[in-house]
Each structure stands twice: as C-alpha cells, then as structure tokens.
Image (cartoon, rainbow, N blue to C red; front, side, top):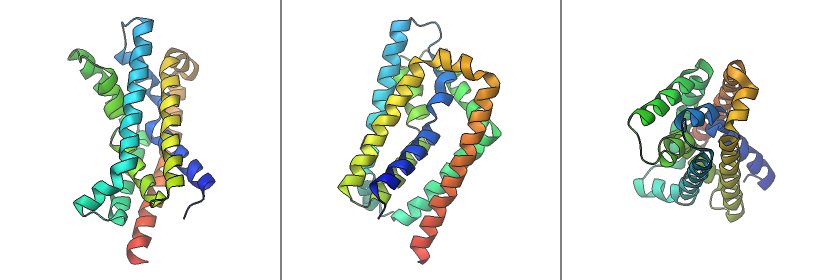
Amino acid sequence: MAMPLDYLVSALVTLLVVVDPAGLAPTFIAVTEGLSESYRRQVAARAALIAGSVLIGTALIGNWLLGTLGISLSAFRIAGGLLLFSIASEMVLGVRMRRESETAEKAIEERVRNIAAFPLAIPLLAGPGAITATMLLAGRADGNLVLLAVLIAVVVIVAAISLGAFLLAHRIGRLLGLTGNVVLSRLLGVLLAALAVQYVIDGIRAVFG
C-alpha cells in the first residue's frame, strides 16, 4: 500500500506530465485565435472544468468499469503503461505537438461550437493518456478512501494548473519560445517513458508474482 505522500507525488507528477498544461498553451492560443479576452477566459475555465470532471469520474468508476468488463488491473496496468510509453515516444520525437496543432487547426476550420469541450477538454486535457493514467492511479489506491481522495485532489490541482496555463498562455508562449517548448516537451517525454515502463513492470510482477 502506497503512503499518501508518496502517492501524492507520484500522482501529481504523472498527471502533470501526461496533461502537460504548459505544452498546451500554444494550442490554446491557436484554438482561441480571434476571440476576445473575456471569451478566452470563459473557454479556459470551461475546458478545465470539463476535463477535471471527466478525470474525477474516471477515478471514481474506473475500477468498477474494469471489473464489469472482466479486465484485471494487472492487464490494464500493462496496456496502460504501453499506451503511456507510446505517448512519451511521441513527445520525445515531436509527433504529439504536431498532432495537437493539427487538431486545433481542424477544430477551427470546422468551426466547432464549443471549443472548450473539443478539442481543449477532450482530447487534449482529458485524453486517452490522462484517462489511462488516472485509472492506473485509482487502481494503485486499491479502494483506500484516503488515497482516492488524494487522487481527486490531484486532479483538481492539475485542472487548476491547466486553467492558469491557459489564462497565461500568451505569456508562457513568449517566455519559453519555440526552442523552450521543444526542449520541455522532450524532457517531459523521457520522464513519462520511465513512469510508463514502471507501470508495465508493476503489471508483470502482479501477474507472475
């Protein structure tokens, strides 16, 4: 059983790396191009609220859903770790950033009515990687209400950080610059890859242990 502090640090680092609020700042700028400052704030708040709600729902019913589908936690840990590793490799190789930009451009071209829900909340903030990570972390809580409360608190913190990153998107973009964004994405990708491998190892140990 993980200790609350260890679990808190692990959950916070994992979700921050997967969601990457600072890395999404340029995408937010692209999606909200031409909107007034007040509407940008509304979009940022709604996106963070929707994404946070999706991830909290995942934390609460994720394990129940796995049980209903007959999927063991060990199998999900291995599959989730492989998925997170795929996302990490995309971050390191720069594929994720290009795809997010394409998603944003497509949303603008199609004139999506609610850009807070798509593409900002889903799939950029609460995408497959974040949902998978949340389910894995909920599995680690193993029904412990204290750890589950910690996970929900971490989701709220990450959502709040994402909101802050969106509100400060223009400043973050100018501060990091193109080179800074690229370097940050690569470093976070390597860290996420290590976390993903650990999830796979934990799953294999649970199966054969």
